[in-house]
Amino acid sequence: MKKYKNLPLPLPFFILAVFLIFTLGACKMSNDTKEVLPRNQSLPLFNPHVADFICETEASKVPPIDAQAEDWFLEARAMEDPEIFVEDRDYKKIVDLTRQAAERLHWKAMLNLASLYVEGRDPLHGEEEAVQLVEKAMRLGISAAYDRMGTYYANGTGVNGDITRAYAFWQKAAQMGNPQAMDFLSDKLNVGPANEGAGYWANIPVAIKMMECAFSQGYGPVAYNLSYMYASPRMASGRVSGPRTPETKALALKVLHEGVAFGCEKCANKLKIEFGDPFDLANMLVPYIDKARAERYGVLSRALGFNPNRRFPNLDKILPLPPADLPPWDGQRKSLLDAAMGVRPPPAIPQASAASLLQKPYFLAADYALHPAGLHSDAPTAPFSAYWQPAAGQGLTEPARLFRKDEEFRHFSVLDAAGKIRYGPVTWEQCLTIRHNHGAVEPRAARGLLREVARPEPLLSCACGQACPVSGVWQPWVAVDHPLQAIVNQYWRQAWLTQGASFPRPRRDWLLDLPDDDVTWHLMDVSIAGPG
Image (cartoon, rainbow, N blue to C red; front, side):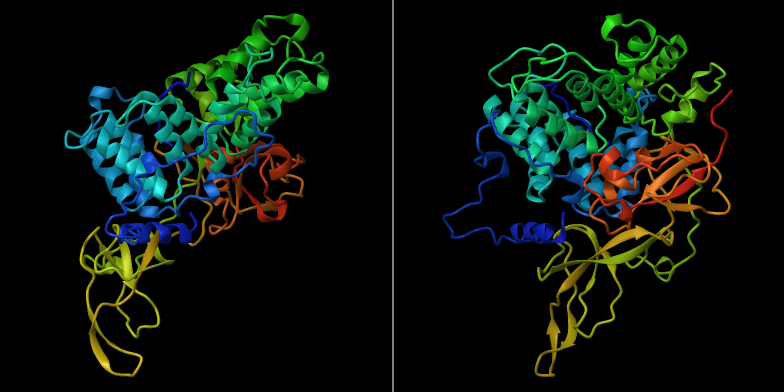
């Protein structure tokens, strides 16, 4: 069975427009026809015997995230840090911050808020409100919301328990690009260390495609099972069809190592055992026993067990795979974790903008700028909380202002098509807040997950095809409007590279359908190779 849980989850605009149509009541076809609630929608039954699986990327299909909402969300996540005792957490503020972000259609916040409701962190909201929030995210086309609804059906959370419907929702989520659903379903297709024989659901080719798709999106836990698929050749039934070879073992070892970088505790523990005390010396994945490497993987495994939100993108700085030599280490847990974790430069200090000098509701903090989202509404009230301004072409110069959900839009005097003045409603356009940092390369994460370093001088950037000119931490970056920016412009994509090494290639090294030319690498830190 699935390890059912409510985890924080680490659209194109036309789908947002569809959501607005639903919001404005256009989904009713007649007085006697009501919308089928997303929780009750009819879905194809789970089919383990499909001939193929098409990899979709979740991040390319979710709504654009409002920068101010992201800051609220990250602040709330930091307040739930596992190092803070549950009884010491300010859940009232956590709920308030998460709700603020969710009101801006921050999809991760919407699902986190649903989790907080289910956990009883808000006395005024419970399981039914959580289900409604997930349904709202489903209307936005969020694949993670379909995964969550599957878990609700499996657990009977706010809905009548139904494992058949649960699998149907998980199947839909995987098809839409959700890595958690892919990981779970691929495991059911007879993969992993305990499933080497044939079984009714066995479908190894599709399972591998699901796992690779999830792994390409930075989902670490899937690396554990994927390593077993790579270690030995297998038939479609799941049965091992040949011995491990040096090539298959090297590939499995590489996936486990990258899984550790992506936050996979089981991968770190597996490598601790492989390097320190393997169960089968004849078939071990590693080239030789190395107690020093085993000790370092053990430190990482314990850290991930305590805080699964950690990521170690610069793992090679302190723990590269053989045949590379181990860098020196002083034996202190903190120095090893600091070396492996992501880094960021000090945030740019924004200069005051015109909006930051205005009063509410026109006020906007100097940290942000506004960008028209291309989403319009002719409704009398704001369909959701956001900054809105009269759309262009109506002869108005009214600046954007903050409207709360259901707050009445203002009326104006405008010229109609005949050139006559009329007073009444106008079309409004949503504006997203964006970082007011002039496009600086600044990966973001909840407090405590990044180590701040001095910004290198001079700034150095390279294309994928170049050789690394300076040893250090490098951050990949794509244009902010790129459809895959949400899984490239992340601190967990960083890499520690030595001078002369090749930069990672998206298709070759990330299994991500992304041209090399779209990615630029930026130097973030030039510190020594490891703590000693």
